[in-house]
Image (cartoon, rainbow, N blue to C red; front, side, top):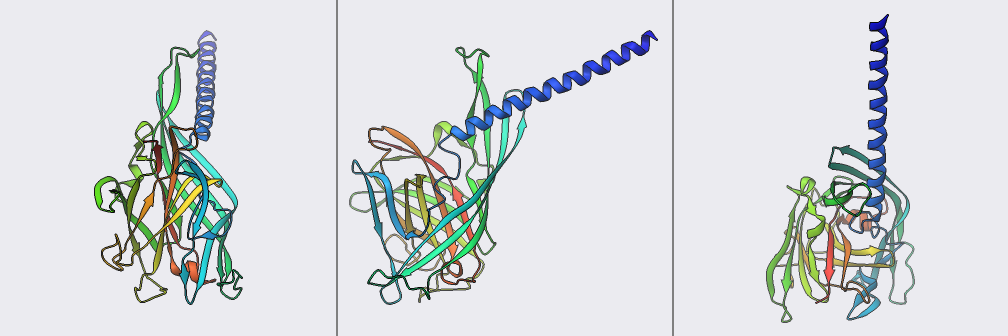
Length: 331
């Protein structure tokens, strides 16, 4: 009887130990979710444009010391202009953790549903209903976030968790187009292309951890040139003699109140050396960190969209998206 009692006691001790350990992990991961929510480098705010917008625009971002709203419309056809954007209907985030004693890896998945809106207007600013349309879309975006436990003498526990690094957010919809790489170069006041600043390739993107303390840094109000390489399994639709079958956009900012978009082109003009070589380029003037701020953290959403998505109401929805966080510092 004594042996049986000992075994029962040992079994209860082991079960209680497992429960306590599981409870401790749950508390840690709950805290990690709070840290993730508070991190300006993560998330999908800014992916939503709140409806149709001009192809190039800026809202609420600091330019030359002011927070401005501006836009540049691009024409197609005979004086017609196109606006497009996304109106998010729902979004869901799931996070799975692999947590150790002092390191935790979070696998973050964002599922975004909404309406893709295309509006065509004439020279009198009237909408052309026969060319305007909307379609539903669903996009899935994934990234990894690495947390580490660091010493914190002022904390009651003597330590705290923080974001150590994160991979770019990668995803999109469909399988017709994909991003292959992006590079940023300096641009002088005389519009001469300068040194390479940053470069990212699809070959390394999924496991490329960007240190939270060493995000790509841009100087406010400076100019850079972006080159984006794409792969198009078609194209199924083109609009002009260049035979380019996709468009590329560099979206940037923080949220719907502070954001902008730049259309990059594969036209063989300006910084784009060869027409229709699947490399889209364009110059961007870096916005400021925010009024009265010395630095700020923002997000890019680099995307390519096939032109059947843009021009054909029943042409499906095919995009590829990368989101890379960056920092802007005042000169």
